[in-house]
Structures are given as C-alpha cells and as structure tokens.
Image 1 (cartoon, rainbow, N blue to C red):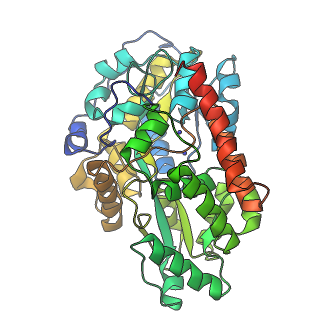
Image 2: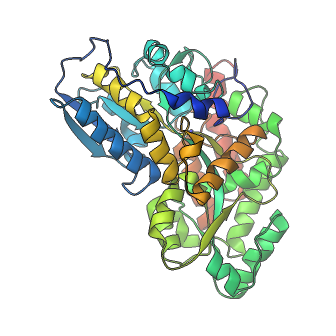
Length: 438
C-alpha cells in the first residue's frame, strides 16, 4: 500500500464509464522515441504475487511484449513490497536501476523520487499514447507530481493500471458456526468479535510488521473523520491535531482491540504474506486489508466459504488508484518501457485483470464475466461516486511508512500507549510540513 493540495479533485479516483469505455481501441504501435529504442533487454521489477490479479495480468503483458519484440529479452525480477519501499532511492540512483518498475504512489514515495530527479517525465508519452484519455482526471491524481513532489498536479511521473481499496474479508463458515450476522455498524462488528473471543477464537488476522496493522488504525480513525480531516491530513489544507478526536480515537480503540483479544499481541512480528496465508488456512475469521488480495483468495481458498464487506459504519475508507509503473531516469531502455506500459493499458490485459479479481482502470465493463468480480468493481465505484476514498495513513511524509509500522507495532505489543503513538506519528508529519514551509 502511499498528495496535492493544488488542483486536486477531492472527488474519488474512479472507474468511470468513460474510463471503462476508453480502451476500446488498443494502440499497439511501438514508441517513436529513440530513448533506448535499440536496447535488447528490458529489466522489469514488480511485487505482485504470481496468483494475484495483477501478477496474472502483468505476466500476460510480458507475454504480449515478447511477441511484439521478438529480439528483446525480458529480465523480470519479482521483488517484495518491502524491498522496493526501503531501497528504491538508493537503487534508482545507481547503475543497477531497472528499466521499469512498480512503485508506490504518493508524496512520500513516487513524489519524493520525482522531486529528486530519479524518475522519467512521462507527460509526452501519456499524451501521445492516450494514457491521459484512459485515466480519468481523478485517477491522474496519483500519477502527477509538482516540483515539490506533491501529488495531483504537474507532470506525469507514473501510470496507474488498477484501483484499490481496503475492505473486510470474512470466513462465512466460521461466522455461520457461531451464528454471527454480517455487521453493518461498528458496534455490531465489535459484538461479533466479542463472540469469537468468548469462543477462544482470535478474530483478526493481522500483519503488524508491515502495512496491514496501520490500515486497521486508519479505518478506526476514519470512523470519526470527514472529508475535511482527510484534506487536512493528506493535502495539507490545515493543521492536523494529532490529539484531536479522529487520531486519538483510532489509537485508543486500536489499543482496546488488542486488550480485548481481537488482535493477537504476537502479530506485531507478522508480515503481510504470513497474515494472508493464515487467513486462507482458516485460522482467523476476519482479515482487514486491500482488494489486492481478492483475486488470490478467490483462487486459493478452497476449504471454506468467504465474502467481503466494507468496514461497518464508515463512509471513508483507505483506497486510491493502484501503484504506478515508473521509468527510472537511469533506465537504459525507456522506449521499451513505454511500450510495456502501453500493453498493460490495453483492453486485453485490463479485461484479464478484472476477470481475475482486480479493479481495472480501462476495461470493457461487458467483458467482466464473474459475478463476484463485478461486485468488487461495483463496490469500488460506490466509493468513488460517494467520495469515499481517503488514501493511506503513511502517505503524507517521506519515511512515514516505517514510522507507522513501528508505532502500530508498539500498540500491539504494549510498548507504547495511545498517547505515545500519537506523539510518535505527529513529529515527522509536522517536520515535513516545516520543510515544505507550511
């Protein structure tokens, strides 16, 4: 899973009908650019699992690319999210930079690298190849960065291929066993988790060592938030009170969930992958995380019935466009990288993404055949039309992801009080504002 103040439409990042229809024509022409046009190797990194919707779609894109470029070798390297998150700045500033990679969007990540001159300006290619027409103006929010590395305006430094949002995955078999109905309010949700605890079942699969735990904190905070808070926190419109009712509620309630046994204290050391696998194995009835798991769960969960629902009672949810394809400034095969991005935006790949449990940005809606996949996309569109996407808690400041991970780990293992958590995440946030002259 990570903003602009200026020119940002606070309307959501949507799969509009126009965006879905825009890919009726595929541009499979090769780049007219001479940047690395004679290169014989394309080095590509991404961190999508091979059975995920994105992993399946990008594998197909590589296959198509090889057909169209028979003399070019594709050196694909699957990296973990953490590897790229922690090392991108160093790698992209070296001669070991790949030619194209998937990278996290937001001020603290793609914005920072664009400001440092490490990413290629894709504006001309976006216009020439029609990517700007396939992406609605709000989807372009995560693709564009100004001279300060702030999202929402300026030049194209990346291209998103999918949408994403956080939801609640639940084990229907376990819910039925304890006669628990799907909750529609936060009170009903906590009552459901109380029932599991009373039956000696830890309700939540949690990955405290990586992004999942902070998304639970953010969902709780957003239960007390409105769009003005999100604009202040993510877009720097006004100062944020880290001791105010939104963040303090999120921190205090998260700590209470640990004390009540909803979250296991040993989950502070669990990684996202291990969290997902444990839920697939039926060890936990509930997992709160993103749509990027959806396609994988659809293929791998065989021993129980499952479903999803939005975090009960919230009108705002963590979510945005998906991650970006970015081209490092030191790429030796930029023309080939542009061609690969173009293939991932084609109807063939976008439809494949949607039919494998992803949320495409430029698919043919009539080509999505699975009912559950249609529901996934429709739920995203509901969030879009209801202005319900609130980005992610780690987006506002460089290095904030690691701050959020460490702070939520402290709440899980009991080494930090909610007040200490609030102070810990306030400091780098306010330091970043000072650096920007805010």
